[in-house]
Image (tube, rainbow, N blue to C red):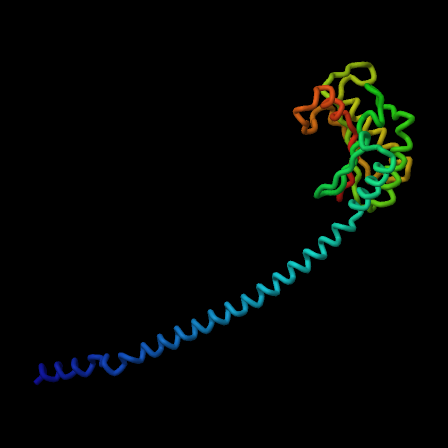
Length: 224
């Protein structure tokens, strides 16, 4: 008797898988359908957003291009290029735009005699014009860095023990001239590099031509 009851109890507790065998498939199918709908929605939104992003990028590119075309740096370059062209100064002065601003390069012969840091009399009109363009066109938040560079021929005299002193003195004299023309001293910086930063040269140039090109003063108008 007891054994028969135990057997009937075990049979009652045995789960009936047959009744629920299809219910989990329905749930699984619903979940897959929902996931599919979700991903379709995400892809659709992504397509819309991508179009908006592309339009925004195009608009920003146009705005940035317009701004780049009308920056003080481009105005400085245009004014100086016109001045150089009108006065035939291509061998004395050059102007280059870069990512940070504009670089104005004076050939040393335009400003100084060999071994000297005193401005030549003929350099004053040139510096006066360049100073006026930089002063009137650049923004008050722009830094003006003046660099003096020499060739690799050593100099040693009482006034200039080395090319470091000579290059620094030349840069300093240009800075002082800019100050005399109304450029705020807070915006100015003078540096002498001697022959430590030579230019990249054409191998076809003679040694003397390369040395002459390295004797220069560079005025860089930069953002702070």
